[in-house]
Image (cartoon, rainbow over all chains, first blue to last red; front, side):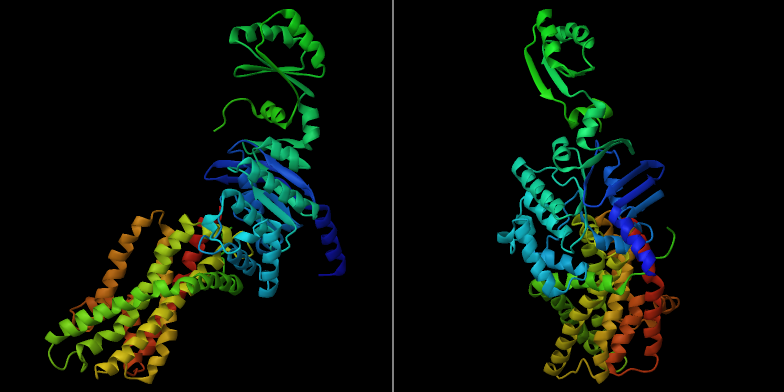
Length: 320
Length: 265
């Protein structure tokens, strides 16, 4: 390879860690991913948000070579996923949706065996294992069996796996699903530490809070397509009004409330027992509700969030 | 992606190494039954049944001398078959170890080749231990069971024999979705091979087509190889070795492709 092309390749991968163009995957006639485009910059945390079955996991699997795209183009660190499977896997670390730690090995042994898959010399692997156990706060568990770890500890150990090889890109498929709040916060903290080190993070989640806290940019997927893209702030500004009033009342009172708020509000949504009113002037709207004299049991005033965007775009129905 | 995938030696070695690490932790507790089982056959059939077999035995050997080397071959078959069926199935479908491994630079095809090597290694370890036991027992009974220095070639041949049975077991594993289905494999493949491959009686005395059919089965040749090496081989053993090598090479890449398709969507 000439110096020129090497430099060119270098700059490409510096600019974008990942690039997908019209990426599709179908299984026996079922289209799991129906043509998605995205570009992930180096060093950013990029999120894939969406209900179950939206195609998030399939997209992740195409990145780490567990699923081969049906068509379209996917480049990881400037390399084609179809042609450079091994090279790409050397550059990325993966936390799959299911914990698949090696149960027959102890915690530290897991890291050492994992290091061997990346051809890490034993001495370096031992040193890295100690550093990483410290990084994910599992030093005391080094000699424990994997099955003795809690769900949160297992996830942290998997996060340690992903950077065993000093990888630059970390792919996490629902890293905090099923964890209690304490464990979730610990995982978030470690993930932020990874971004602080300059790693590129890709994560899927259906926790809006997680996406809002961690992601620089994100996409919302539904039915195998990307339906929105941007930073959490941009998405909120673009798709919903900044303020939300939630009114709770008897169903018949909510019926009567509807026509009153519909005029001044930017949008009104019915969500079970509550009426969600999106506006940029909550004060005025509240005043109107008060003067109407309708008995409202409970009013909540809050800032609009990603969850509102998500529900606006994907609908308030139950998606199975 | 119709291209045939070839395993990389490096990746296969890493998978083999993982199994060695785990075996190193538990070998003391799992090795014993594998020695005991052939000894039971040796005692029951070699000594028990053998007492009723006329003097002069088979081909000039006593009955226990006749069956001992054959049990070496079947021991290797059983070791490699269990490894490539139940153990591989658990790693594939229950513990999902392979899903984790293939996210690293180790590929699905390396996983399969690494497992072949490991099953072969396990067959060699067990078989070599059993060979040592046979040699010592022979001295103890003053009825040598291993009579040739050629027996030193038995361990490397057990590796090849183990890999052959691992390829067969992995092929079956790659095709099934439920662990219960192994009863078919063991009842219809492994047990008939064990009984009709010339371990307990010479197949050549059977009417046609039994000897001809036996020639096309893998354990028959493995038994011939072990028996010849234990007692001093004739050049005909090369045919058996060639049969084993060719059969293994022809079959080896098929489970690799099927397993790759199972692991990668």
